[in-house]
Length: 333
Image (cartoon, rainbow, N blue to C red; front, side, top):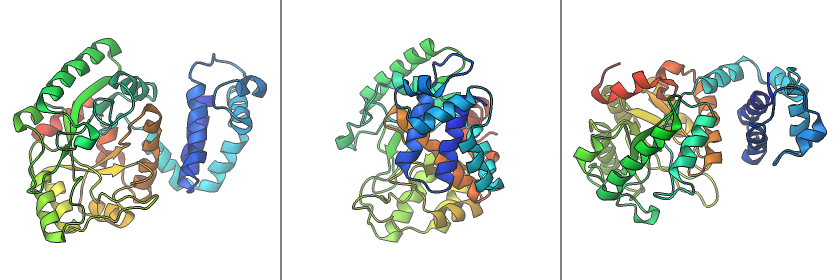
């Protein structure tokens, strides 16, 4: 046990029991602050001097720095039961994240910062998925800008070293007819394509179903992003209506992963559709849809949801190695 692991485990267990996202975030923030601590005992007063560390997180840091299991963590583990352990094991097995944004579109940070934050979390890879051209409000990427971004990604990878790779990708709008909002040849050059609906979310079920089916059957599409488009915070937004049984069957047949979107305002798909997709035999991508480095921590909530319905790592492409992940574009295992 070390302070970083102890704080991450506490954050996960708080998520498991439905704690406020703000409370969960406090433990992730404290874990970030421990990144540069030297090994060895740290007293609570010293821990309090770290940015973002309060009285409780300081005590956790102090206890864990000696190799002990902090008392607060021990209590949460005893109360959580074995199901939570399965969720933590899935989160610990995470190798990457298929959906994150940079300031090339509507993210708030340079792609270098997003890559470094993903690497610091222990990811082996992450996919840069800035928006496609039609989403002008998000400064979506034209073909020319996407070409430039491919060069920027290559430059970042040349500096990152062998332990991490930033993958090329896009979050591509699914247009009204189910086609994709980007040049198909250019899409074929990307490592991962996430396809999402961002417009006409209140369409009737029949056209929405046809729209989704065309997208998930497109050989360039790897992941169906936030499939219902719902928003569950603030004024909210109802989920889109479509024939979920048919769409998820098509995803399973095509090998298109269904995204478990971890943004607190989305948590998409809803629980009933998540179970339905699992029953259909779908693969899943547990994705943060992060627009800032600190949002990469949201991923553990998706693994908790996956564990609750009995999904194993084999069904979650965000636990796969690069050697296994990248050949999925050609259908191999």
